[in-house]
Image (tube, rainbow over all chains, first blue to last red; front, side, top):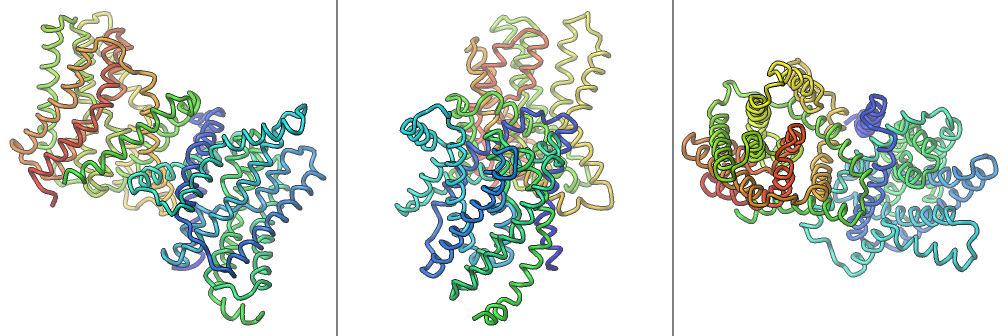
Amino acid sequence: MNTSLFIFQTLAPLLVLVSIGFGAHKSRIIQNSHVAALTRFTNDVCVPVIFIRLLSRATAPDTSTLTLISVYNITILIIFALSFFLARSFLQNKNIATFVGFGTIFSNTFLLGVPLAITIFGEQLAIPYLVIISIDILVVFSLILILLEIQNLPQKLSLPKKIITLSQKIIKNPIIIGILIGSALNLSSTSLHPFVDSIALSIQHMNTPLATIALGACLSQLGIRTHILLSLAVALAKVILVPALTLVLIILVGNVPALWAQSLLLMASLPVGISVFVFASRYDTAQNFAASTIFISTLLSPFSLAILLSLFEHWDLFISFFS
Amino acid sequence: MLFSTISIIAPLVFLGGVGYLLRLVNFISDDIMDALGTFTFRIALPCMLFRLTSTISFPSQFPFSLILAYYIPVALVYALNTIVFTKFFSRNYNTSIIASINACFGNTIALGIPIALITLGEQNVLPYLIAATLHTPLIIFPSLIFLSLHKPQQKISSLFINLFHTLSRNPNMIAIASGFLFNALPFSVPTPIDSALFFLQQAALPCALITIGGSLVRYGIRGHISQALTTSAVKVIILPLLVFLFAAFLFKLSFFEQQALIILATLPTGITPFLIAGNYNTGIRISTSTLFLTACLAAPSMTLFLYLTAYNAPSP
């Protein structure tokens, strides 16, 4: 299939769903209160279930690839820290800073990433991609959750009480519970029973439509003009800067199997993930920034993905040039 | 064969149970239920209906035997239940009619269509859609006429104008009508839009099951247990049994037509009878209890009758 047509066909349904949400809010089918409620449901029910499914079936990569993934995760944490502190320094609204950092590093790993990975690499060869996104989600979500919970702690509390309250909040968080269950299943080599897995898959199917419809409704409710420049900057960083840095890392680490390297690069090049909006709604912060950043980065991503797919076509030549 | 039938129905029951439990322990609140209901019934299901009706291939002849095999048993059950309620339970005429609507009117759209899609497959769902589309005109319209006969201050004409007005604003009706209209056009739905509608279609069933499961917490059994049990037994045992006999032996319908009618017959009672009961201020507790009881009893009934159909006429 023609590359640009393929990218268009993968991205377009997402934009159609966002448009349906936008239209539903404009025609008052979806009320303002529904947006928060829908994202809360995806956050508390769908995302934890997805974690259980994903983590329970993840397989471990080899040593060189593990090195690359570790270096990648350290790098995105540095990018997160840079964008977070830059945003805190320059923005009046400090609460947005966490989401600036989150938006810069977190990709649309499921909705766009999985079908793209399966089409580019084939169903069997997409497993490295699934392993990489499992680790990425685990690292990024844990970091963001802890940060958001810290920000939401009452200032008056003493440090020991803050630590106890934080621990209680984190341990009760449905996503953390999902991560723990998924990891426990993985470590004990227990797979989900097919019956339970089919239920989990049904719940997973709810996630994308609910989140995108809520996102569209939020765009209608709050507009994208408020943080348009900031959103554009974060979107550009996500679809250009992060993949460029990832490519540099791949070259520097060297000797990484092509499939793993390409999977990592694909994940890094994807537009901002819908979870950024889900979290923003859950913590009632920066929803309009999150929604507009996702929207803009999705509009920009066909260009970055087209470059990426061209690079994959000439991968051996490219890597041999640097080795 | 029995195992494969159970393997289709059990996850649905389990998902409904998940919704019921999550709402019971207040893990999902009323506002989430409200938002999920809006998403399901006003966006996901209409989009699914549009996708189905805009792509389906129509038969060359109208399937009269399919309609008769379902609606003759419905008429018999309706009459039987009304007689039982007036003579045996000594209930007044309007309450008996409300009970009979409960005994015949299933949750054909929110539950029925996704279940039919899973059980029959997208290519064999047409018999279900045809029979289900006639559900409201052939059950609710006559019932409203019967009810208005005992409410002389209400004119039948104004009743139908109100009904038409309500239906013309119903998202499912709009989706079905626009789907059929689009079906007649010489071009198909563009791929990106179709993919987006497919995402919504995939979400429709779990959303509907969780929403309906959660909403059952609000209903529960609210009295008139023997009457509600009778209505529920008529809905999930006698109606499916008659439909099975008519479809399999009298009209000798095809396998998929039989299965479509069994799904339709065994569905739990829909919300409409409860709304009508509220409107006429009678039979509310029977409707609430029947809604709850049929939701609990529908799964074993559907499993049993789908198994009987498959046993009698093995899948082609």
